[in-house]
Length: 286
Image (cartoon, rainbow, N blue to C red; front, side, top):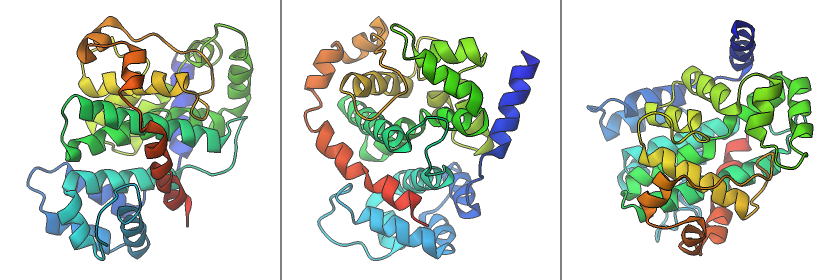
């Protein structure tokens, strides 16, 4: 077990760090006394990043009725929390290599992640979270599978075996990872969340997106779990396997409906995932 943990930590260490400006944004945003002005100053110090954020804010993803021309404006329109999550999403996409690795098709990986992000945000909104808080839900969905990238990049031989194993009927990626590597993408994703100093709720959602029943009940974790299974059922991109896990009773109780009922409540999912593609486009641009 120690050997597995050592291997995981060494793989996580090799992952690129976030730019300094993003670290500062996350640190500031977690401080209750942080002012809009402080956050704006940090972002302004990074002109490339400023440009990406403005392009994203003016895209169809936000669908604002007028053009936003400065970060000051953006912070007023979006609020601190949404601005933090936009920065986080762009940085995470930028830190992940574009190339396909160990059989992981990055186009399909990101499409699945975007669908989960969008579904998670929409499910959160159904439960009454504010627009600002919904940005946390999107970020959690976007990054829930980030552990797969660490495996594919830095444990490629083992991960190829994992992906081969999932072609067998009834074998989930999660089970195959445990069998072959001795750990899961959720566990290594949680280690990466620590390295990147991600907020606690986000770390929790990454760690528990397959095990929503374990630990304290969490609305965010439940929404990521449901968003993940819905995206798999609707075949958005690739999650690495074809096993759709049933929603636990506690999640169905939270929404007062089953998975098919939830899918009916998300008629614009397709269109909203299309709008969200701008995250990947801008995040990957150098």
